[in-house]
Image (cartoon, rainbow, N blue to C red; front, side, top):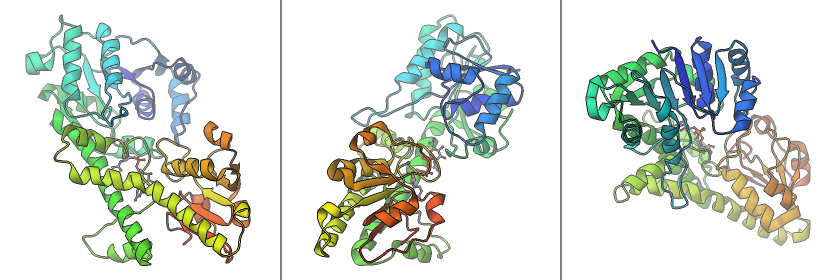
Length: 419
Ligand code: SAJ
């Protein structure tokens, strides 16, 4: 029986996962490199914003099933959920996984299960097994002893949507790639403690690629929508109507264009595949480039609007621009890799005091924007005040409004909700 579970990395995935194990009355030891994170959790609080999570963490810590520490301790199973960012050259950086391996190696004992959840380039789980084997020559690992290994190792990617993490952790199917059959079986048994979806077993490399393929699929399809939106704009066609029409075809399902693709996953993971197969990834790379280029296209639309307004006789000095939304997607407060924020940064640098921001999910702007001094307005103030309204994120607060714009106002609606 796996009774004591250690989660390494208490971020957006690690903390909810730790909490769900704890809610099933398993003893959970959460490990993080940040003293602030550890202290916050041990007080029963959370350091991230995610619906339902605060109550669950409070209950799990209060009942003594979850506690956090900076120092790994012996456990029956270890789940690694640490970040795998990109380097400046768009290469995957698995340094945090290596550090996690080093930190748990001294406390491993015969019969332990080690699961990697972090999004990783294909081959990383085998590397993890290698690192652990080098650090613990007294134990056997799957690459050495197959089904009879002392330590079992599996890859099991998370696939939950920020904003719905708690629900999706329980409901979604899981793909589990054990290094041996026994590794897979042990991982399935562990996840079955709280996962109601199916736990589907596959090879370890297939599980790694599956995660990358899921997010690349989405990126490529959003790239198609973004490309269509720029073509339609040039040809005077309403892209949202076009997509609604095309999606009436039984085998067509075009996604929604926007101001670009943000978040820490979809804008990042496709590069893992590109890096592993540079000659074969024409489509995946092109989609990344299309999506990455969309913010600059939106800035160009603002420049064109300014030209149009000055031609109408409005003095350049008078023109005010309101950007609606700066988070990476609707109805969250997450700014990571946000294309909307990227656009606002460029506009605020270029047009300084002309630029105002509406962001119902934040009470204050990020520090670098405060320096550029854009005002934080309400939707109504922005509609009353701005000559150019740039709708960047489809927050529910914006969908509830039906603005009546005058002839001296220009709307650049990248989400198709006010057009
Ligand atoms: N977006 C569009 N048009 C669309 C859909 C999304 O422009 O039609 C944009 C969003 O505005 C946002 C970005 O794409 O900027 C990503 O948003 P998202 O809601 O599609 O996905 P994420 O990044 O929040 O979460 C994704 C999910 N992956 C897939 O849906 C395949 C989630 O299931 C993964 O667990 C997560 O990445 C992850 O951690 O990898």
